[in-house]
Image (cartoon, rainbow, N blue to C red; front, side, top):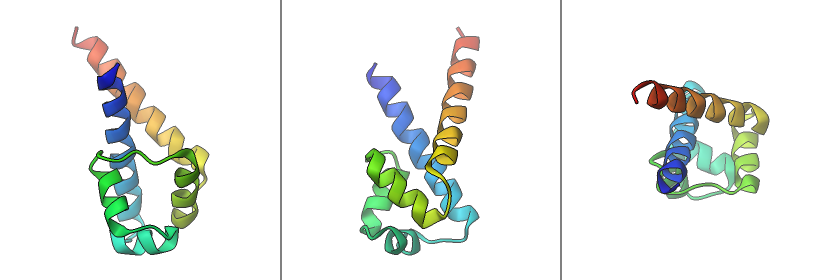
Length: 89
């Protein structure tokens, strides 16, 4: 179960980073939009920190996307990873 938790944290970070870069934002830019420290954004992106639901809403507000869209991206990536792992067994 611990691997499941770590995987989701990593997918959240990867998704956040991809969206941020796609919008041409630096970590500093996004942190300013979300009123958090740049290091907090960095820790999420590398999978060392997992944002709360309320922080996900704030981050999505900063990215000007719906939290449901963000979570759909995370879910899709997770399902793809799960499917590929089951195919390898």
